[in-house]
Image (cartoon, rainbow, N blue to C red; front, side):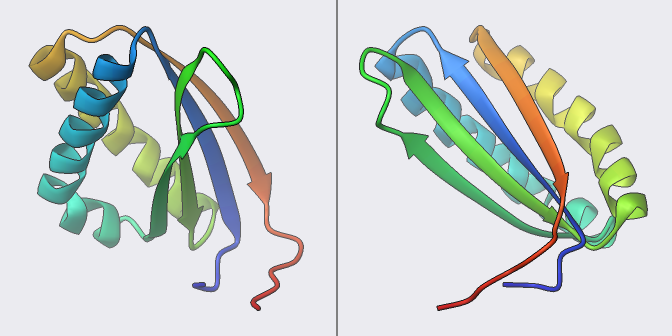
Length: 109
């Protein structure tokens, strides 16, 4: 795991399993297109997961790690652009819930 100073965990709720699958694939394409911009802004890592322990819901989780607060702020601008592109490409309605934190400990096993 990189030497992260800040992290964010974002959940995205979708209305159906098909919206989730299409949403995940389109988000991945958008991130691949913007990879270098996020890297240049000092984003260190993005991990995408499907949340499966909430029966009857369709959720993705996105864990982001950043070099520092400056990187986090730079990436926020890129997120707004990526999110607008996602909606334009898919028309999918999603609800985003962000959680942010300062890394206090990082154990690697």
